[in-house]
Length: 124
Image (cartoon, rainbow, N blue to C red):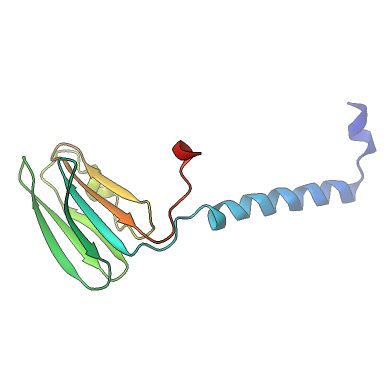
């Protein structure tokens, strides 16, 4: 590793600054942006699309029972679901475009859409 001896303290400082700049840019550049609509699906079909502009509550009649979805200005969440593990309820509030909460046992999902779509590695 003879090339390491050629680096000076300023070189290490520049490399550290570049690494910090790259790390700081990821959360800023790879966001989907603020969501503007909530899309609720039941068994893969669109149940309802609502704008995230005013508070409302949506009851989705799933196979296991009703799933309750709350919408507030700029965000939405699954408030209650009859599933055992409650993974979709634990997702909490969704506000960024591309975020999704899936209640698999009840076949209900909540997705946030927006004008800016997030980076998707599957479409790369």
